[in-house]
Length: 127
Image 1 (cartoon, rainbow, N blue to C red):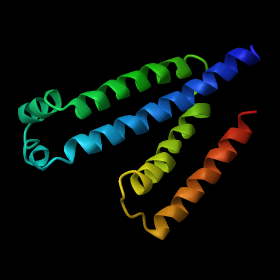
Image 2 (image 1 turned 60 degrees about the horizontal axis):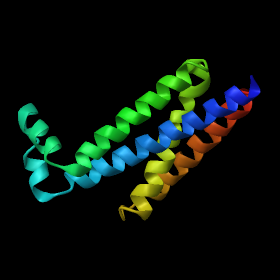
Image 3 (image 1 turned 90 degrees about the horizontal axis):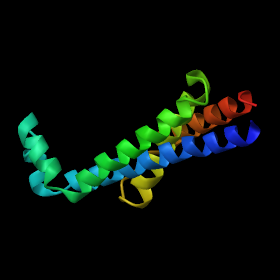
Image 4 (image 1 turned 120 degrees about the horizontal axis):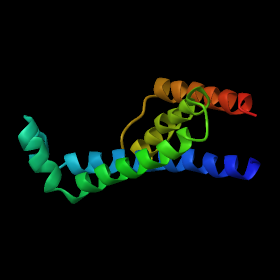
C-alpha cells in the first residue's frame, strides 16, 4: 500500500511538471509577432494552434498532465492533493525568470515564498 502511494506522489509531480512545460511551450508559441493578432476569434485561434508546433506541443503536454492528474485523483482525496498544484506558481515563476528572462518583482517572490510554506504545511498534514 505504501509503495502504491509513493508512486502516486510521483504522478503529482509529473502532472505539475507537464503543466509547467505546457505553459512554457504555449508562451513561446504565442510570442511570435503574428500569433497575437491571429487570436482575435475562435477560428483564427485554432488556425494558429494547428500551425504552431510549440502550441501543439503545449496542448499535448496539457493532455498528458491531465492523464497523470486523473491517476492521482484515483489514489488520493482531492483536498489532500489539490494544494500541490500551487507548485505550478513556484515553477512558472522560476521558468519565467530564468528561461524566459521575465522580471519578477520582489513582492511576487514574497508571495511565492508564502505559497511554498503552504505547500510544506499541506505535505506535512498528509502524513
